[in-house]
Length: 113
Image (cartoon, rainbow, N blue to C red; front, side, top):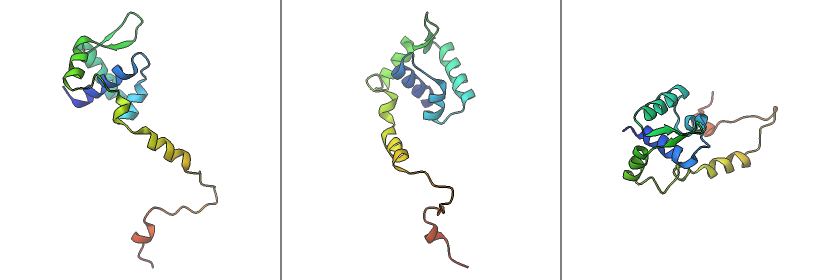
């Protein structure tokens, strides 16, 4: 099994019925079409199944894979430190239209005229 498939299972197990494909695209850095193809493959292989409400759930085979890889007791969010990203975005004040933008390490790269 591909590690991306394991991460999809971990995500589905973490959020239960509150999944959003765009979260998988963002968290895993995959394309939307790739995520759809992988989810369809996991359903075909019975790692995921569609419950009576029409939502995806991790099946018995999926739970076994997560257990074998010691991922049953953690969530996908434990793997990502998103707090740092959120705090960084909040602390950065937006540039005004007239502010001068100087790229990082510009002084080290620019040799002059």
